[in-house]
Length: 214
Image (cartoon, rainbow, N blue to C red; front, side):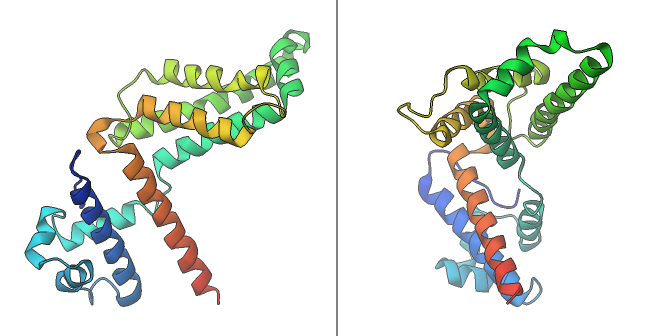
């Protein structure tokens, strides 16, 4: 990674994030070749030499930014869990029938539904495997962890009520936080810092896309 973050040093983390955001803005507006480390340091308000407390090189900083153009694995898992909870909370009757009446299908129909379920479960396993490869998730048992996440979040359909204390969106956010905190690898830094960075990057891309269409 081009930007290194030190746990327990919020000032250092903030500086590293600011360097990355400034570089993103300058690379977008001026281009990589026309942007120097001096430009980045001046915008951040530090000496050029101090940049190397947070980055390894300008090229690696570019690589770090380009790597995050791909959808972030943590964000993908967050969205999977969030929308799984929302879907099952909104469709309690369908979920109940789907879980209790599988035996009532004929063999061909049952095979089809079971196959679709396996494909869906595989999405969660794939994201867990990808996150582990990237060092973002702990090296958990992928299959068991995926089943656990699905069982916990699907059960919302059994007790959620629109008349309850929390909205379905709030419940989905709580479950998302439980899952991500459970699988996040502390060696990758702070989960909250990572999610904030992803959110800023997404907002930057949306802004840039909107500007390009005008």
